[in-house]
Length: 227
Image 1 (cartoon, helix red, strand yellow):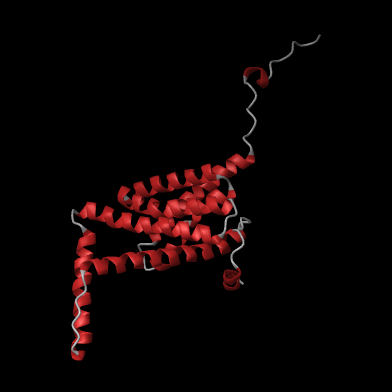
Image 2: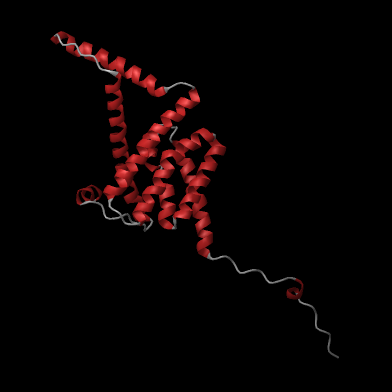
């Protein structure tokens, strides 16, 4: 006597869907990791390690773009800004996104297209300079005072005092005008941004090489610094 067939578990439950592709899972994990790394580096910038950490601000977002695609880099930028908003507040989150997050995304897009270092450094310096000016204006809005005017007045007074001390014994009296100080400050911001973005390129060239995402070949005089 044969027994009737017993119902199997497969008859009661539908088959499991196929697992997602490994690359998509890895992309999500790396995006979360790089976003948290951006937040951690930004938090460490409020410690004595600030001068060193500042060089790595744009690297995580740039790495997300280089390893995957621009959409992943944008996702890492958004997630890191949201994480910083929760941990430190929206003010510091905005100061990270502009200019450092945008700088990392922009430079990585140019690196993907294999453009020259001269293009990425100069355009990145413009973004960095704009970001510094934005931070000054944003801080002025928060404190309710025009910090640009305040800094100009203080620097003008300091410059005139130094000129009096250094030139009075020669019988030379020269007064610096506020517009002269403003021109010098703008020039300093541009020079500082250029040096900063160039240094970020050097750091990125070393970091990206370990992740098999090499940057475009640098100029020969830069290659000497990396060797």
